[in-house]
Length: 459
Ligand code: AMP
Ligand code: GLY
View 1 (cartoon, rainbow, N blue to C red):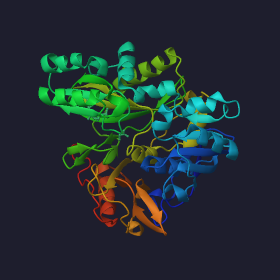
View 2: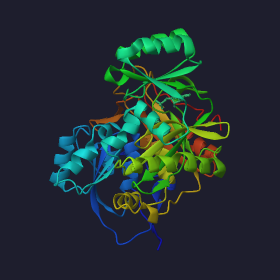
View 3: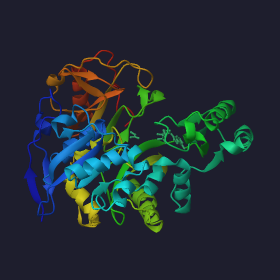
View 4: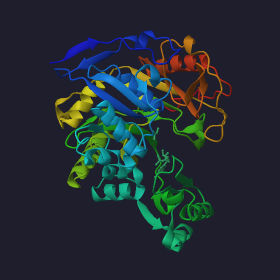
């Protein structure tokens, strides 16, 4: 039975007027009876604000805590000052408050083994954890592991070799004599999004490799994956899995470069569009058959516990999809366009994931397009100032503002990070949605504000 319920949303930010588009989202609830639970969300960025916005609308959520959250999440639940990477502190809080579900936003707590920590102890083993085990998180935590996984399960990806610090002469020799240019160098471990370098020249590759192997990214680059360069348009596919079955969520494309026209250094993401109009049913069928199915089957074959999101960073080369990277979480800012297009009750999906009954659920997507534009601090992704007062949120109309690098000081919202907020809008077309996001991006003010006015320029 499908029950359609209208829920009034609380305003998304302390000073943000509820907009007509986002005031009464339609939530479809597919199962009854409703089971209310206390939920802890880990993280504090724009992605987590979007999660908190969606979870707080759920019929299944009685109380939402966010660790550590941000001023945007503070009006949707209760922020708690807990370090998400401190497993023991998270477990203590879960016990103290009787938390029944932990939703993990960023990758670090997963790579750090929060799943294993909670499942190991009888007192917390019953808690639903949305996110994979430490073994599953290696798909993001080690590029070499991910590449081998793809090779073993015949998942299309760029050809590669791996090199170790202990045998650096092999790496340098390969780059000097054999590598085809351009060539991609990837630090094996997590490097805060900075561990991938595309080299156009041999000398550049040799210098970069020498620096990486001698610890440019600490232990993360003691092993380096060298990968064939693929040319095409990138997109992000999000899969929710219970370990047996899976559901594909709305697809998105993000814009990683800081400058307009996709120029300048890489960032965490400066904007996103969902759905990317260049993806047709035929391409999505290839993604599902060649990438999603063998990935889920591979995890199962390896007996890897995985109940959570898989973020496939893909590239369309000609008419074929290839995997650029796996992430074991949702994307940021992609979540800020994916969740507003998801009509399902998110917690109901999470409950199905935990019960391994996801195959009974149906994903319901809003037909409209969603876009988001990131407002960044001037200087990002390099050094930038903090503490700049933010004004104009009360002028925002028909968008929702997801906060990321913000802080509340004496009741004044100020900047506290590189990516400050994401301005999300819905529209009949992505152009219509972008026009609304652009208008509101201009209305919000802080010293040094920067945003890309050309999101979607290539579509
Ligand atoms: P990652 O940190 O793995 O997401 O990589 C950052 C960015 O580097 C990707 O979004 C791509 O734009 C680019 N990249 C990574 N691997 C390749 C590749 N094999 N060919 C071309 N571009 C790549
Ligand atoms: N937007 C890319 C990421 O979340 O990794």
